[in-house]
Amino acid sequence: MISIDGSLDPSSLDELLAAFSGYESALMTNDLEALDRYFAPGPTTLRGDPSALLVGHDRISAFRGLRGGLPRRTITELHVRVVSPTAVLLVSVSVPVKGGSGLQTQLWQRMSRAASGSALGESTAGDWVITAAHVHGAAPALNGTIWRVVGNPLVPALPAVVAEGVLDPDGLPVTVPQPLTGMTVAVKDLYDVAGFAVGAGIPEFLAEAPVATVDAPAVAALRAAGAAVQGIAQTDEFAYSIAGRNVHYGTPPNAAVPGAIPGGSSSGPASAVALGQATIGLATDTAGSIRVPASYQGLWGIRTTHGAVSASGLWPLAPSFDTVGWLTRSAPALRAATAASLDRAPGAGFEPMPSPGGSAAASLAARFVVSADLTASCAPDVRAAFAALVADPVFAEVEQVELGSLDEVFAAFRTVQGAEAWRQDGAWIEAHPGVLAMDVAERFDIASEVTAQQESAARDVLAAARARFDEVLAGRILLLPSASSAAPALTASGEDIAVARSSTLRMTAVAGTGGYPAISAPLMTVPAPGGTAPVGLCFVGPRGTDLDLIDVAAAVAEALRS
Image (cartoon, rainbow, N blue to C red; front, side):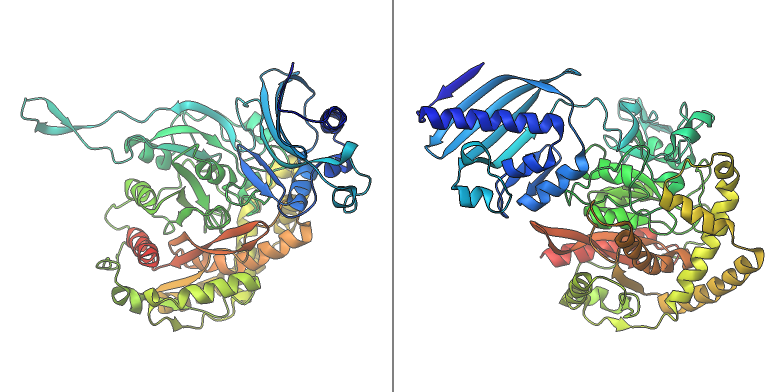
């Protein structure tokens, strides 16, 4: 069915409909060259869908090259609305062969042959090209790049606990308040959730894994506080990555930077939270797996003090560094999840700093230190953004400190992490050759060659560094970027991803080495194609200061806004 509203020259209409038909044919055959020609050249061309808006022909082309082909579909309705002799709005309804329906809205404009064809080769029929498009495809039941399994919810919150011996004025029992009531959780696929198996980002591992009979303590704590488990979210293979790309399940979308990697290994929980599909992402951080996706997607995230939350029921990567943590869209939600989960038992070693009084800059000034060596390997735009931010009066006097040889610390951290990772997963990997992605397999290959003598020497280096860092952080907070760059593009080469990874881990290893809490707060941006991209500001504090560190970061964010 075709409906037309407005007057258009018959030959122009025929050419427009031919162009629309040609575009549909190119979509069905995934003819990337033809699709490039059908979209107008230049930096202002638009393409949007429910997940993102892409601005500029080059970004649209790059996205399309990674997307792959589309399922075949039939156009059942086409509505033509003439705006002018050279501009027409087309709205079409499509029905994929697999079922459901989609909606496409396109603004087609007639350009001169030079304008439409010179940059892209042979021109399209009649020089009609798309200058803006919005696509709403058939709704998927489940985005498998984000979720392994999801419900509505998958697992409900635990019932409220009745306060013993407490009655309301009517003589009825009073229940203990649940601070996370109404919140939902995306659980990283490393935690036990009763009734489900842990998949660790690998289908073959999931197929052999036993079904958990009880929740991991970190899951149970959130449910006891009133939160429901929305679903189990994807992770990078064995959590041994900070990129967020999984060869088995695909790459979750980056809600903040379309066409960029989401960050890992807590990629699924991060994307679920950033897209509003969950309130809290229950994640892990060994060497940056919370801080990096938080930085890439503009989220709040915390790596807790090592051991502050039980790691029982969690598939480990490197137990000396593995920590429990959360990703949220706001500081209050992050604090609520943290407060509901921290183990405050006697002997836990908590020595909180005094909470700052208000958000006045003067009350925060003496707490902050920076290290020039930490940011030396950052991208220039991140270094510039960080320098501008810490020069803000909210930080007043920021002291420069020396942390010693960070390259030596990173090398030692990587050695111990690798040795522990191989002890944990090496036997399974050897029994399943060829299952892991090339980059992850390469890390495990290197890890398999770490000798006991190398591991022992590396632990000595880390012990000395921890003592040195403890002196620097005594009563103070270290500031640094959460990642060395904004999120790399999906089209970035493996070499570029590796460089970004090494530069980032050189910084994130500081908190891992000391077992410190570290918060990524979305307080910086850097230029990016079509706009800006987020970069987190990381706050690293003494062990046991988790809640106070959130309070400080929230106070800084508030002061920067005022």
